[in-house]
Image 1 (spheres, rainbow, N blue to C red):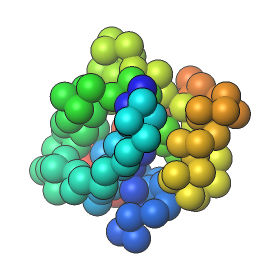
Image 2 (cartoon, one colour):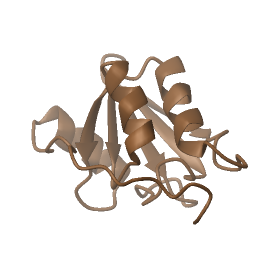
Image 3 (cartoon, helix red, strand yellow):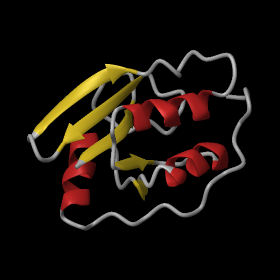
Length: 118
């Protein structure tokens, strides 16, 4: 399974913003590896949520762990059958471990999006 997690500047904590997170952590649970990659959607003029969602799909992610998520991005991810989970605490790797242990809940409440307002 490939888990995507938006990261803060410190490349360790879950970022409260999905689309504008400076980095994304991709954890491959089968290979027991993780890779931190700059988020190309972070500086988008508009549509950052959709761009970030598509980027996650392009990375073959099966799951997303996030604090919150806009409805448009959620629609794209759900259409691609990516399960969205609510993060618990700040540590991204601890969240990935919690998901593998079945301790995270599915995120099913999405905001309307910020549409360029940060």
